[in-house]
Amino acid sequence: MILFFTLINLLLHNPLRAHELSQLDKFCLEAKDYNGCVAKHLESDTTSTKFNSSNIIWRQYGPLRINWSGWHRKDSTYITSSLNKKNKLFYIAVQCEKSLINVSSVSIDWKGWALPYKDFENKLVNDLCKST
Image (tube, rainbow, N blue to C red; front, top):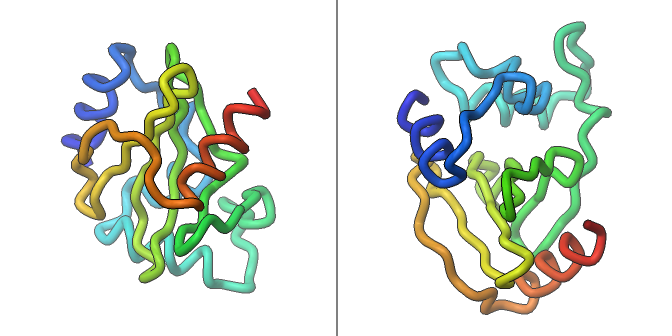
């Protein structure tokens, strides 16, 4: 997890503050199995007093579920948490000015900036950048 925060900091050239994390990220931060914690709370129909899944707005883009209510801006980059088709947590970053996307692997390593290739990637970038 420390590696993740270091990578975010290097990517954005700004320190990441705890208040910028979603409620779910904050709730699961100390869990031994972070991905399992996130998946459990997203699949659960019950509401925790510490985390209310109804606060998250999810949007489906292809095989991905994007935490639409979790977008945070740092300089020219927007970042939010996402779930892949296997319900594994990863992060997605978008640079609207250059129409670039970057995703972390499930192990939270950034893969590198690229132009959107698939239709759902283009739609995601267009939807986000039009709304900002």
